Image 1 (tube, one colour):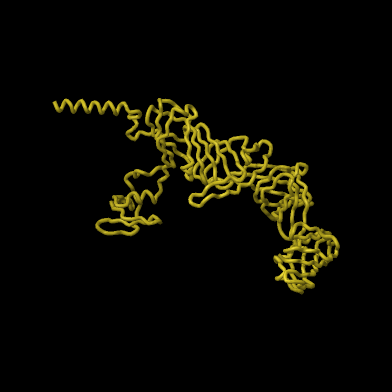
Image 2: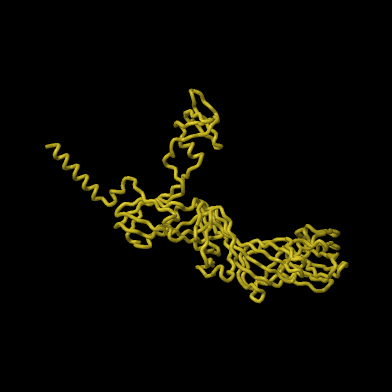
Length: 476
């Protein structure tokens, strides 16, 4: 009688298990979804080492519990940013649990898994068993063999099997409850570090230094641990705020990207930022630098400027009569970011490399500078180097204090031109406090801002020109 009751009880328990949704999958049955099932991938890249990945794949789910293994995701993924949704039937799936498995196979991890276990050492075809005792950060072994302890023994290491817990590729794992058996197109969104973009420019001066051919390039740097095949690509520019764990809020500077060359990128506003979408698809491989043309302006008018500024930052208490400073004259290239100059588009921050076209059409590198974000209709200045044949000299001819916080200073600035042509040089003088130019020869100067005066003079070839001025300064 007791045996009959026990049999009935076992039958009832079995029926309850079979009635549970997903019981057939409860044993560790999993569904592998790799890049072969990928339908679409899009990549939105910021220039602060951050990207948003949208990965669509076809998945086949059974009714009830499903263990979904979504492999080939970025190694540098932020697991807390992951979002999974069914594009086919969003209401049919319930997410029970999510895991990110990143304990990838490596020599070090393989050996660490075998500490305390038997391995084999193969030396010239002779295989000898040993017990692994330790492995250091350089992969050197300590083993027990034939009752002795050997440090870094010779021979090739042979392991009997891949230890459990190690995986070949970074993988997202979900436990999903499906209402019914069906195929779904699932979209996975996540943020990953390791991808960034920047702008690079190449300027080629013509032989008369009157114009430049300007090309802008987007440079993508992918070190995220994943390859994005045939992806749609979008660049986001603006100042996006992110949060650093346990470090408070952080504003991430992101420069506005340039408007595209026709057929390359399409620019659209996005919230308070700008998005630039590549009009075609491209593959962004792991550990790859990729360059795509952003803009091209073949004939941008320029001005070549010469600027002299005394090298030492001057305050009143640092000055004395007779002080002399000799310095270089800077070479600056200036152009307008305007439509009639062949541009008129937002220029993202980046490095600008300048080349000079010679009469024989060969190119020489003449300098480089970096620019900040430059809106349309603004002026770009590139400091590319110092003029070899121009010299500036500044001498304090008189200095006297006229109060506790004020003084008068007289200066003589000499500009020498050893070139075979006349030039115009702008001299920049800086004062800290309230200042007034009491006298000046030549008489004209320009007040650029609250601390800066500029003098422009023509210096004939082979000649020296002087600027004499006296200033009164009431220091802050």
